[in-house]
Image 1 (cartoon, rainbow, N blue to C red):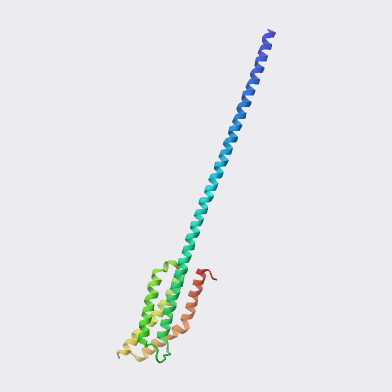
Image 2: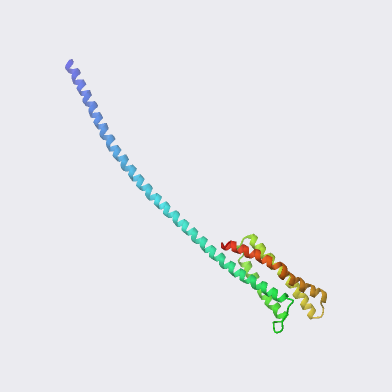
Length: 204
């Protein structure tokens, strides 16, 4: 009986040792597999992170490129619009001027030039309003409409007077109103537009 107990004790001990060894071996290999998996996962994560960074860089580059192109187009639009606006203002000032010198174009010739500059400005402005804020557009429209309305009235009364059907006092009043508008009001309105354009161009 004692021998049997010793045998059973030894067998149990051997079983426990073998079980422990098997468990240790399994844990060892599982640990290696876990480390390998962890390393692979980390490597894959690093690759995906780099890919994401690259994609974000490309998106940022495209955004910057589009913003740069938009700024260039807006700058071109501002330059062209300002040029046409100034030519329109000059033509209006020349047409309404109370000082006339010998050898210069007649009022009729100046009226034709003003009409051309009016159309040139109006066409370009209406086609490129998308590049400007509503506030800028309103300021530009205010200048244009006030000048244009005054010049049309003066031009109509000038034509009527030439045909002998106009009122001389009304004609001279329209002339002085147009001249005073160009002399007193337009410079401040023009300055506001120039300030807005400088802001859009980033030079202030």
